[in-house]
Length: 111
Image (cartoon, rainbow, N blue to C red; front, side, top):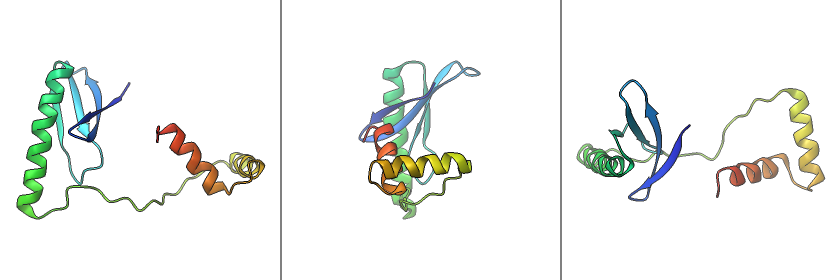
């Protein structure tokens, strides 16, 4: 199971690495890898803070944009029967398929 934590206003996914016996964090939305390990949540937050600082400093030194840019578009492939059911559900709420799916994703993402 993965969880998301906030470190200095940046989101990171946390998981357990059974091979190392450590918690692993990885920042989301960055243009590169900034992962970190620790044996407790408190230590993970500390290591994450250090890792983020190093990553941002390196990006500044190299003149690289540290944050990934999102277009707001993505393709979704569905079974045709699911596609039809989704269109009907959207129409039942007087929404376009895009509006309906966007609302579902917003709710699921806690936004």
